[in-house]
Image (cartoon, rainbow, N blue to C red; front, top):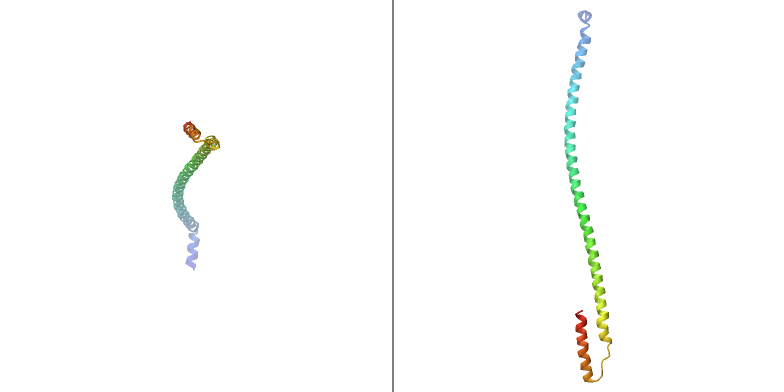
Length: 134
């Protein structure tokens, strides 16, 4: 033990230097580990940003498809409304034709004598043909 104390008294200044060197080596190691971790995180960030861009493009495409579907739906509703309006007009026209042409023929008095009835029927036929050809 005596030799150890003698060496320590002579070379005591080496202990702080060795500690500083060890601390520097440890610090360099920690910096290298941190830099490797940063590089890994940057790579993960790049792949995450790429994934987000792909998802964003997919969402944009879906939104465009939804807008086209909504526009087509609105066009279908407008076409259905127009078709319904045309059907209402056609029904009104048929009803008008029915009231003006058919009812008059049914309400006309028929003569009792044969010659008069034949002449009346001829007039009605001509009137009917003229009415339907309007």
